[in-house]
Length: 362
Image: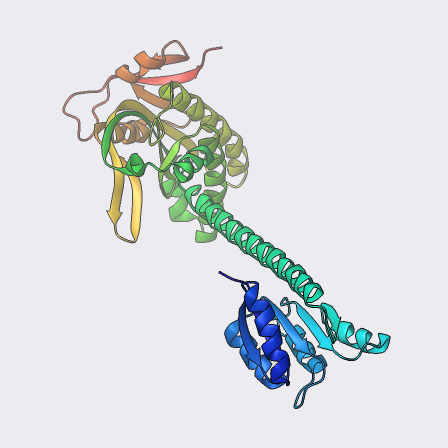
């Protein structure tokens, strides 16, 4: 689109002359006969440059410039004052008021057009800078939104998984699918007795400490947190982002969790809280995907593997990590385990051969 120039003069002859010169150069022109009309035309026409007569009735050019420069919407529009007053004092008044250039009448057409081109370039540079700032502000806003999304995702997933989800354009990540995972289910032995006798504030404070320590390890080992339920926590590995040796990684996390709770237990016993951690750990196939309804959706795993992990967790004594034969066969080179008596678990028709993972092999 052509650059727009607003010409302001109370003499029709001057307006005709300016309009002819500028139209020949391809500018779009709007005219105003006095200062008040000029301010109205600025609002509707939004010129790129204003050629403004100094001496006019109703409102002179100096006052028009002052008003324009005080308005955030229009202060960036370059103004060239046109005047028969050529004294140094008049030039200073015009420039102090905010005029960007000063041309003395009678003016040379070539010089005037050169000054208009110069002011047009100035306006274009300003507009480009404004656009750049606006784009930068939008990018910053977008980054803030992404950071907020990341923060929300990190409440449920490890940072590495959250980043992958945000960066990925694959909408199928959370669609229902079947995959082998390793499930780690843990809760505190003695928690029911403790919560029945302790004050609610004590229970909340203990859970806050316990969750914080377990959460650090879930993030460290890149597990997917399915849920907190009081003292119960369920974590699984190898979904939604696949990972190699997911069962070994799950075992390493579980061992560290037991060690962490062992440290917490020292302080708990001093307060009279006899609590310890029990863990069930099982590898197997599950169906995974989003569960819930519009407005409240979780990401979860459904299958025999989750039930078995929960049942083994319930049977574990404090400090034990219980697993089954199939899972142990995947990690037997990485852990030392001791066999236990077969367990008759609720919901399982046959007894389950159980093993306690004692420690990691060096």
